[in-house]
Length: 132
Length: 291
Image 1 (tube, rainbow over the protein chains, first blue to last red):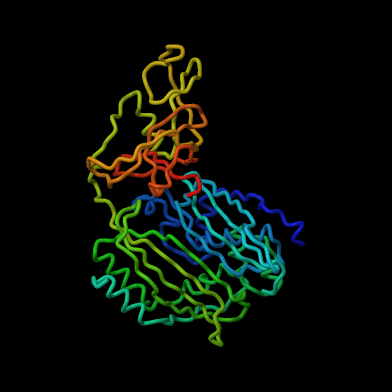
Image 2: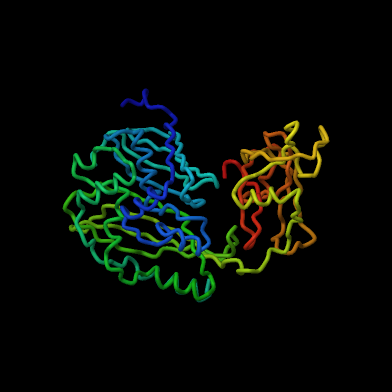
């Protein structure tokens, strides 16, 4: 992958936030907090439904960027500003733009949006062809 | 700052880095495979090279026995002071390298900062920030995380927002939409013309048959005033009242929020946001498109 062929905008990634996805990612990240798998408890605490946990948000940001950058990319840093909750039944759509590229190091500005607004915005820094 | 909350925060920060219990399991392929499947991540590099996805750093120590960390005392003190609400605002992770199969990580937590009290959309609150570093068996850092939460004083439960809209048969659909996160615009069921504010009759064809459309939630600021005086119950002064032009072709009045007042200008792109004001009322408000 050469700098010339890298597109400046990342292909969009839209993820349907099914209850299965929210529960399975919460468990895969070893997060057993009830608001991530029990709708009755989530609603009793004032939430609309169960919602994505933060470890999953970080994982999906990473997946979004490596889906585009490919298996040779090595992620060095992920900074995320957390926004509105990503509830079951919603759809989380990631978009991104390359903001800098120098010495094999690429910085990508990322946003993940749901119907309520920005769920996550931030930057990811990676080496295009690095040793992990 | 000499109040007890900041005093405690300074004391906890002075403790420096406090080590937690090591991960109960070494970095292992079954947990990585499970994580990749759940995330829908098809990147083959991890299992091929025997490394963990870096975003899994915290996962390895989620099941570790929880010792009391320097953060817990600060959060408990905030709870006691009435700042019982919590919402995470920032998560930043730095990866020195990817963790390898077979190694066992140990977390260490450092309380770094308490800022506040500050006024936020959720209520008055404090931002608490801490860092966690995961070390390998040679005590070298593998990954670091900065984590920040807002601990806020929730609006008094059951206390109604003092400015309630007049909800009637003409307008109920609009407020019902706001509760569901939809910006609804009344539409004539005969000629299809959109109109706002809602009313009983179409000004274009005089039909009383009506339905509604759901707006995209984008708009531009057509005009605005900054309200400095007199005080308004339930509102912090000053605040911005805007007239927002929707691409659908109608204008709607609403507050512009999450934007310094000096940055508010005619023509700025806006996006609707829905804010619960009390147990029953949700108001559509407007934030800068790039906020």
